[in-house]
Image (cartoon, rainbow, N blue to C red; front, top):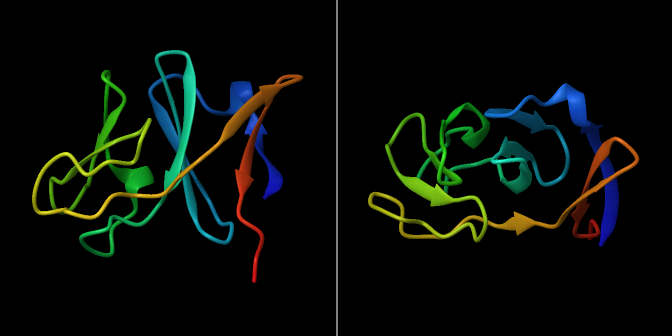
Amino acid sequence: MSRIHACLIEALPEGEALRLDTNPVVALFHIGGEFYAINDRCSHGNASMSEGYLEDDATVECPLHAASFCLKTGKALCLPATTHLQTYPVTVADGSVFIDLPEER
């Protein structure tokens, strides 16, 4: 795993998302005082999850297909998506948010 600096805590307000141009591309969400990182591409189609509709129950709905995913587990919660999204460990320290990503091969 490789730890990357995603942003300062204050750069991502509660209820917002941030797209990170990493490899893989990651969507970072701030909801309920927690930060969650998932793969930014909907598993059903080519849509950015960072542009999705964030819900208070830590789920996000795809902006194009209405598929819903759990931010905690990446689980696809409804059709048309049937494949889960990859989640990534998030650490908050010293006023910053960090994400652990797999090493590039």
